[in-house]
Image (cartoon, rainbow, N blue to C red):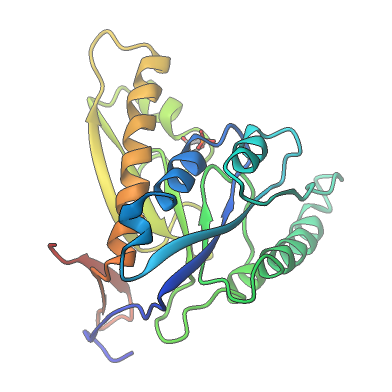
Length: 239
Ligand code: GRF
């Protein structure tokens, strides 16, 4: 990719994806339901969810997927000590990449939807875009990145006393809650909000934003721009 050159992501008719999730699965559900709509199925490039994988065998998302006729697998995260966390993370990443690839002959995207494990570079390398300097792995984070990274985005923003917060979809890179931003949406924190009310308002925005993100990708509205420092930015074309 040359400096400041604008490129598109190349897509085939079907965009095969696997969802990774660790818990309740409300984002995963919104995405799976969107994929079953005629809007998706009649689009030039339609998303197909080939399966859902969770690191948590008790995660509600597994049952949700099965109810929608989508293959669901629990791939337990190996238990161990603090000292061997890196070795376990590496091993898990290899197993996870293999399970994802086993779900379809061709996997175009990995969609993280409340997946609470860190993905290694070896994992990401398995899903490199063929022509752009990015991985075809996307995530949703419950804050306006780069603020409030980490596992408790809503609680951290609420406790900080923000007047507005937001939700972000982004491509995943080697750092946690980092990588080129796809879309963001903002919502207010009302003066009398409890944390639960604040979270519920944000979660609704997450579902809408993640579906919008799938639409933007499938309708080929993304343009990738590299600056002179080889930093990648994303522009979203108007419909
Ligand atoms: C969401 O708030 C997501 O942004 C965060 O974890 C939560 C998962 O919720 N990483 P759900 O499982 O999609 O309902």
